[in-house]
Length: 289
Ligand code: AMP
Image (cartoon, rainbow, N blue to C red; front, side):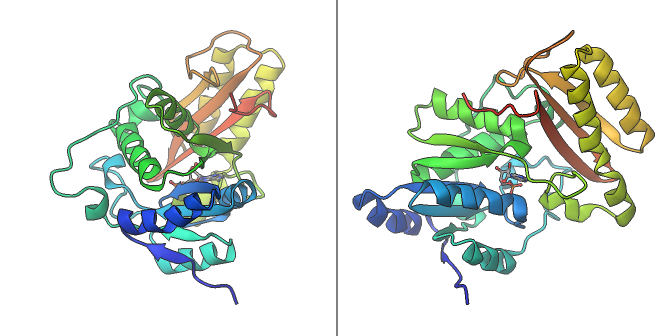
């Protein structure tokens, strides 16, 4: 029988847990999550465990990264189910603070990465990345891991976090992890639970479409052409497209004409569910730099 990992709810207890490991010069990998864990999260835990002596996972649905009309209230929460999965994954410690522990009365500090956050998801979700940057900075300082793992699923977020760690000299390595997908290509996401059966059938088209853009670009087709065709296809299938974009993989600056190295990123609503996905050009490229 697998056991439930040690669960701590305060920064003090988290620091108490990691202090012994530090003294013994053992390494720590942190994986921040918002819970409702799926196989994509589990792949991040496996990566953290393969690289470190101890894996710490945080579960915190961060209110300040949600807009007033977004899904904070109905975001899926299943702490008991999550703890069982974390035990099976061999995670040592789970940090699951409440909102007051993270944002006590009078909390008034914000971390803002101004470059990288203005468009794509930043344009559609004002203040979202300020909320992400603030909570991730706190988690990194609270846990002081050797490295932290973030999924390429949230590609813009991964770059924002790499930048803030660099800019603020936080002594932690940020490790990007590949996107885990369903058999039909749909990127795993806690929000996929919102999809109706008919929406779920259409959803893989997002990945198919951006993969086609990536293939077209690899064949020398111009960015603008490929993006127009992709938007058209997604619109026709019933998506409400937020953006389909071809960007520099490190700076997220717009690209035009034929390209050799890029990231194709997209966000689109299916009904009330906002889906995001991205692929590399060429396909095997990674974020590491
Ligand atoms: P979340 O709980 O949605 O905030 O995600 C926690 C971490 O898991 C983030 O670093 C995400 O990028 C990552 N993640 C989410 N979905 C996937 C996936 N399908 N494959 C790999 N990583 C993922």
